[in-house]
Every structure is written in C-alpha cells, then in structure tokens.
Amino acid sequence: MILANAGFKDILIVDKQNSDEIIKSWKFGEGVEKMVVSAYIRAIKPAA
Image (cartoon, rainbow, N blue to C red; front, side, top):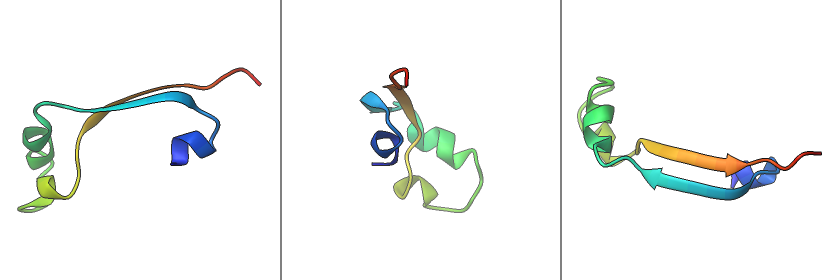
C-alpha cells in the first residue's frame, strides 16, 4: 500500500456513505461510481 510504504501507520480507510452520489457529481461518465470510491482516509506518520 502506498501510505504504508511512505511510512504511515494506523491507516484507516472508510467509504463515505454517499460515495456514489459524490462520484456521479464529478461527471466523468456513466458508471464511474462502480470503479472508484470516495472515502475518508486517516493515518499517522511517526516523527523521523
């Protein structure tokens, strides 16, 4: 995972409940909401 490789810990990814609506509003084309998801991402990067 990209975040872990960058040194982040305690990574939490939670899909937004209205993800389909958000993605449809981007107007990238029909069905895009079935390929991507809008999510909240929380992670901690320890001090060096």
